[in-house]
Length: 101
Image: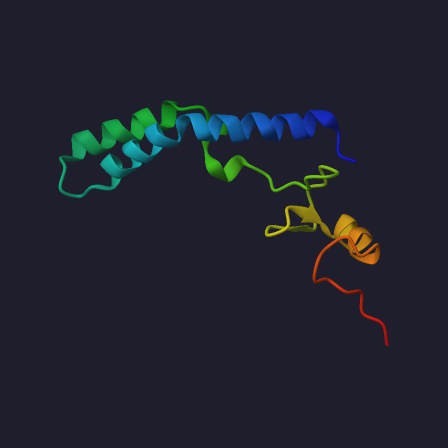
C-alpha cells in the first residue's frame, strides 16, 4: 500500500488539472498561434507560467486503484501488476486465464 499522503496529493493534482484545463488550453492555443503578434504570444506564455505547476497534466502519476502503487501499472485496467496477477489467479477478471504448461 502506498502512503495515503501520496495518493491524496495525486488526487489533488487530478482535481487541479480538471479545474484549469480550459484556461490552460486557451492560453496554449494563443501562445502557439503564429498569426498573432509576438507580444501577445509572449504575454500568453507568461500567463501560462503563472498557473499552478500541479495543474499541468504531466504532473499526474498513474497509480493503482486498489493499492495506490505507482509502478508497474496497466493503464487500461488502472491496476498494478501485483493485484492484476492476484485477481487473475482467483478468476475475478473476465477473459483472463492464468497460463499453465
